[in-house]
Image (cartoon, rainbow, N blue to C red; front, top):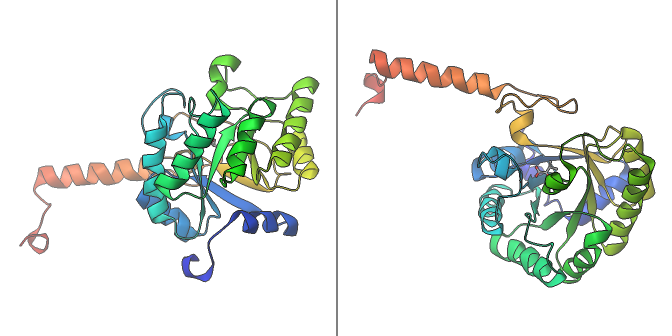
Length: 271
Ligand code: KIV
């Protein structure tokens, strides 16, 4: 089903209205033009140009190595394919932590050079002045709390976050601070479902979960994971909607065998 022509562009106001109406928000990552076109035409409300590009596109073990220039390149490709979906782009590690001024400059570069709609950044109280500065500069910000992959070297693992009371309380406080700082939305990654529900009920902005249960306002997954393009990554929260690794392997092996047997190309495929 293509819903492409039936709807207007998804703005931050559309997303806030969806939360107010109790309508769930669908969000998925994309990093290139072709996939963004398919995802947009399928009717997804938000496309995230995630710094998970560092893992799934570049083959790095973490999100840390990807640069601002590389994120802008991926965002440019996605924006060309996303006519309706809201496009949000991760500010990569090292592009916003050093100072408020650097954060504002990085966020403005993303919108100016890619045409994306907003930026996402990991952190709460510790980045709040930067969030305010970016919002005041006219760039909508999506927050990201819970498991924050850019802090993997501090955590030491990708395990569930905020199990203990102190971390859960800080997370609730951070969510409220991000809302007060002007964030239009918030991602919660890999935290207990009851805590995520509590956060979603204590703020007016849409809360999008990944591994955060069903009590939030929407869900996000990494496209390669949900389409089964990669193997060997099966966290409990992941639902695979296809096994494209197998589908593609079969098609590729069919092609190899047709080339080797001389079956491809046939007369109709020749000039
Ligand atoms: O980079 C990313 O893909 C993300 C999602 C996991 C939310 O931040």
